[in-house]
Amino acid sequence: MAQQDTPENPDYVPDFYFEGGSILHHNTPTPGEWIKVFENDRKGFQRCSEAAAWSIKGLPSHAPFVGDRNNVIAQLAKGLEAGGVITWDHEGVWYEYRGVVIKKWCGFDNLPFCTAPPPCEYRPDIELTSETAATLPANRDRTTIGVGESVTIRSNVDVEWEGFNTDIGSFTLIDSKTASITAKDKAGAITVKAKNDCDTESITFNVITPERLDYEQSYTSDTHETMQIHEQGTALFRSILKVTVYPTTVNFSAIRIREVDVATTTSTGYFNDGKNKCHIAQGDNVPCTGAGNNYGVEDIDGRNNYVKNLDTIGIYTNALIDLNSIPPLSTATFDIPIEWTFNPQIASTPWRQMPRKSRQETILKNNGDITNKKGSFSATINVQDPTSGGQFIQ
Image (cartoon, rainbow, N blue to C red; front, top):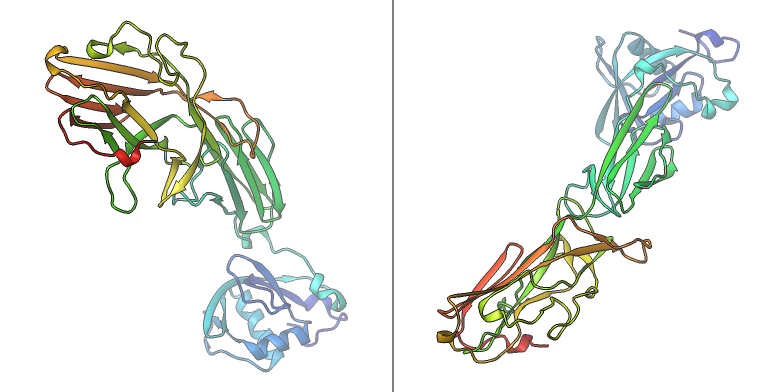
């Protein structure tokens, strides 16, 4: 061990590397980050030793020592060479670090810029973490994401990032420890690599598109009243539904959705009057073309992927019905294509059809039961049930 810290004895002046914050800049140590303690940085080390207590585990004496800078340097060097662990008491919290001595001279005048790295065996492996911009679903470290989602990727050490802009996603370099990706409007994989001279690591994100919609009964927020409309003695029965985009394991707040107009796929009994009926277009024997209004997707009450509009289904006519004059079972069924695109403020993309259509069905029995169905939703009333829901008529 050198007895003095001058350039005349460069072969004996070690750099002390250990995991923690920068002593030269008096930062609290952070595990996983390599910094230097220089024997010849007398002023810097004295400042540090006045603010922190040091000890070395694994040696005969575990007592902290401060004050005499030469004594501290000597014991630190001895402990490191012996494979010991440095502990640092910072404001009552003890940090432990394992280090190695490297014989290298860094001139006194450029000590803060001495950047000789420790050997790879003493440097931490690259560890990548990711966090979605969307706060729902709650598992923001997921690597399966929806179209339009953005993800921030972080490294525990400085790295060179390698990412590409493709038709699946875009890559953005932020700094040596941070990058991000944004999924485009196609399913596929996005891979980001991080490397330094000791290690290489990568992370892959699987981008998925929306598959289907599903439906559930909506209720008033104040009285929790079922939102449905019925007029006693008639076939009028409408159900007002919440709509969700699936799967809900990712976030689809970047998209808009719409229904495409179609004719009934089945129309029997009471509903079969020989005239063409459309899901959206009004009137008899009109063309079932075009699409309905389109709506965005949002997160509400801790749940993601709600469509920003309620859906009303069922029988709109309030004609009186003679149950003795209708068949035992009458049905009207629509298989409705669902399309999606990006919100226009995000990107201009074509409308694409989801793999699964939404089946909407109304069933009328001659005992007076009327059932509305859509997706997994189903509700039944009887023609003679009391009139209700007039406040929901628009």
